[in-house]
Image 1 (cartoon, rainbow, N blue to C red):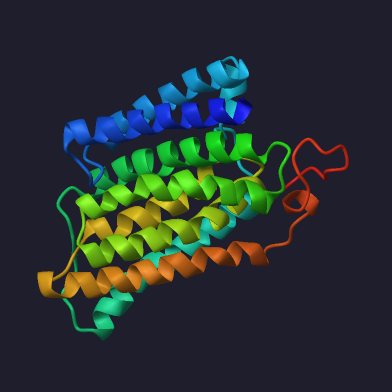
Image 2: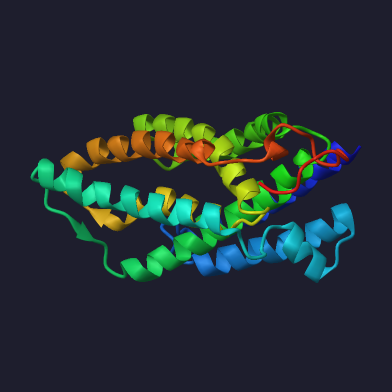
Length: 252
């Protein structure tokens, strides 16, 4: 019964996140602050319904608390490295490169919507609830199913080959992002930053149309693989024991 309630809550949160974006007809972060705010408010409501947590408790439970430094440094350094790959690639390929008009506002919106809101829904709410009583890998595998299903919508908004590769990236990111969430002390912030960089960087750059798909494919492949480096970080027993186990070591 609890599992049904969790997935019902996820469905409600996804509908808020998805329908608000579609109603505004903006997918590059133009209205990301509004979409993200609606999703966060909905998450507080759903968390109260599912777990009876008041706002202060819900904020911490949903991952809005301060992160641990190790995961934060990993995502900041990793994100900087990823971002620099695009100008390096364009320099090698002799491609002109520029940023979209108003890129800073779009980046802020992508961080609010694709970073904060999506990480709150999929890690702070879904993965955290599934993690209770389950090992890390089992919880992440169960969370992968709805995460992949909601990303099928990309086939309606992207070129088929890009949508297919993007779906593969989404599937690949589930486990690293869940690991970052745990190693950050159940905080969504490091994962939100990395998620926004992966999702948003390619949306903010402008290259010749005939070269964009190739650049996008390279970006998607690299970002599907690179985040797995999080598993090279030192860890405790957290990923091998189910939550709620009396012998579980605290920490990520």
